Length: 309
Ligand code: SAM
Image (cartoon, rainbow, N blue to C red):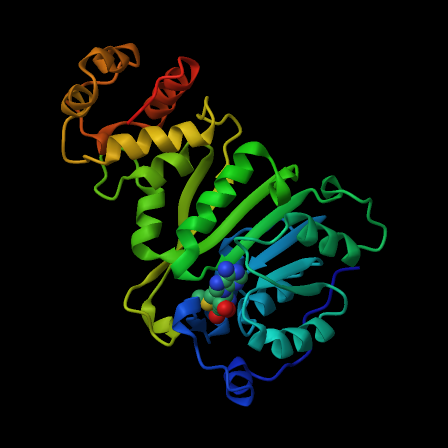
């Protein structure tokens, strides 16, 4: 039996007024009020909903959550830091007929097992482990203030297949400030290319699925947003720990306008041979180096326990 749509609920605008939910800047609160926009995000996320756990970060008053549930998701767990949203989210919980639960907490600190356990509790015949879900979809209009630390933490967990990322199939559909979305998805030689591009692309296929203008949010932020989808690569390019790759990219991108030959000479001229070994043209600048080559470099640096500055 397919889950029904949600019953008619008060509008998000009315709920915000009723509960006096003024946006808090320190929690990067910018709300989407137009359900066409949230429906579009969920539609483009291509969620595989059979036997899936959807984890939403920062539901706020819950419009994106409504779209996920209206799409037919049977198991949605949302993590929200601001307790002021609990009344509206509990109302949604009651309307969702056992398909939705909210956890109050900070997504940066939350115990993933608590998310998994809440998801399992919503299932009637669930085994007691994450493998009983075939898919985990992480979705959210992320708080811009912590979007990058959140993504970096998730990439680490994904690389180690830990927490919610230990499910057999995982996807992330996440809204970032446009500039951050550009960085995540920039390939070698693109101007937005940086550390985050390399680190994300070392284990994920990354692509933009939807650009959302700043006018879609209340209050209106200074910049537009973009929804990026990240799907784990079947064969990750990463051959070292993600920590080592992060270290290598931090070192290289510290002087992003310089040629690699200069960066390596300034550090230790004897290490210039590393570039040759990885067949990296020393006249390139860091942003022109492919993710594959960075991964090769990180692998050698880790294997030989070379200390970077
Ligand atoms: N999903 C809603 C929407 O699209 O209208 C709200 C998005 S708003 C940009 C970000 C939401 O994340 C807010 O509800 C905020 O309270 C919440 N938030 C901020 N920091 C958080 C954190 N560390 N963990 C969980 N939620 C957080």
